[in-house]
Image 1 (tube, rainbow, N blue to C red):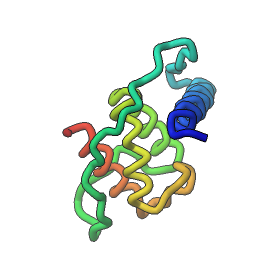
Image 2 (cartoon, one colour):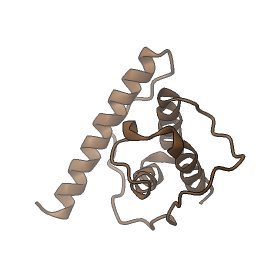
Image 3 (cartoon, rainbow, N blue to C red):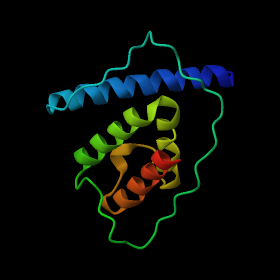
Image 4 (cartoon, rainbow, N blue to C red):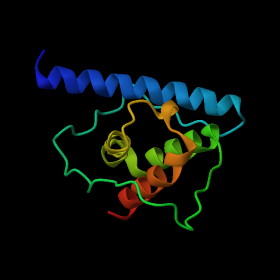
Length: 123
């Protein structure tokens, strides 16, 4: 497979995940934001990698969520706010924390995840 095919497949998978997350959020009474598969595809050219997220000693920074569902809602809202190109960098933040699936995030990682995503918002 070429890199273009790999990237296209990743876009399709992310769209599918986004649609499934929106359906789950809708079940919880949260407003749903569905991705139109016919919408123009995002520019998949390489983007700068955000600085690495390092795990730090706990600080007084409070995260706006306390459980897995709240964390997922926050990440989805951040992705929607950042858009597909910049929001896709959330995966880089997760990778730096040793995560491949958002559902594997432990409570002790919430603050680092939150700080990494907030850094993307400020960039």
